[in-house]
Image (cartoon, rainbow, N blue to C red):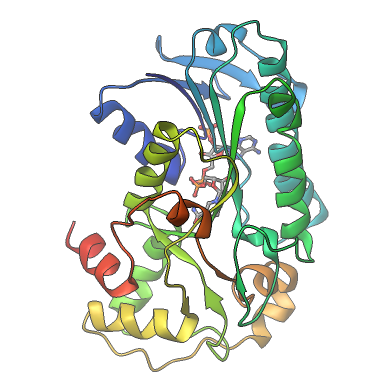
Amino acid sequence: MEILLTGSNGFVGSHLRQHFTANNHRVRRLVRSQPKGDDQFLWVPDQQKIDEEALKNVDVVVHLAGENILGMWTQKKKNAIMESRRQSTQLIAQKINEMSQPPKLLINASAIGYYGNCGDQIVDETASKGSGFLAEVCDEWEKATALAEEKGVRVVKLRIGIVLGTAGGPLQKMLLPFKLGLGGRLGNGKQYMSWISIDDIAGMVDYIIENDNVTGAVNACAPNPVTNLELTKTLGKALFRPTIFPVPRFPFKIVAREMSEEVMFSSTRATPKKILDAGYVFQHNYLQEALKHLLKK
Ligand SMILES: NC(=O)c1ccc[n+]([C@@H]2O[C@H](COP(=O)([O-])OP(=O)(O)OC[C@H]3O[C@@H](n4cnc5c(N)ncnc54)[C@H](OP(=O)(O)O)[C@@H]3O)[C@@H](O)[C@H]2O)c1
């Protein structure tokens, strides 16, 4: 297949690029700086510019690009988080809408942040949008696909959980402090973390490409979310390290209050009901086996 990928330099994008190439698909990349090869095409999402050659004869578009959500949420950063997703998605959806032979499928990233902080409540794809900045971002991000849907293109909005892999993302950041024996739960550790292994992100994307009946919002997280305390203990055990130093909440309230409340201390217990009902079999159902697999790589 001919697959157009955005965010291909990022953690998930780099993995998918290698995965698709290894499976004999041809990958085109939308890049924000001068293209450096036949597989690269320029786009400037905030100026609504895109090299239209990029979309010609493409079977599937996988759109991951967006400003990283970590860091201090100044107004400028929040605008970048929102607009990098809204504008880029609108641009892709609009170009798809204008095509006489559009791609068959648009897989658009979103996040389980859509559901906001929901404590112990289990949320599947039918749950309503939560409150908070990230929930608004996800909602706008998903709505920005409308013109592609209007064209009759299958659109999947992948509500991604915490992606675990050692080449980037949160697990990579946690490894050093945990290896030094400085790992600990965040706050009281009762918040749920809906995680997914990077292998299952690739597995789910393949399954979605192959199964036309999967459409709309799809939770991309493993069937067994854990609390932050369980995550801390399981990672400590996997690395044979103690996890006795909890990370207190109050310093974050001073330096990065909004980000930390929505990213580190928020609780989302999501279940991947739609993809399980569609027959997808997860490679990693439980955190312990996922970590064992990822850490031996
Ligand atoms: N990793 C997770 O745990 C997780 C969880 C939930 C949702 N997600 C979502 O999944 C997507 C991929 O995640 P990731 O971990 O691979 O993210 P990442 O490593 O931060 O990569 C995101 C990519 O987006 C592009 N990008 C960055 N800033 C941008 C901006 N201002 N405007 C346009 N494009 C920009 C860059 O791609 P180029 O340099 O190639 O242009 C970058 O490599 C993101 O949208 C993220 O929000 C990830």
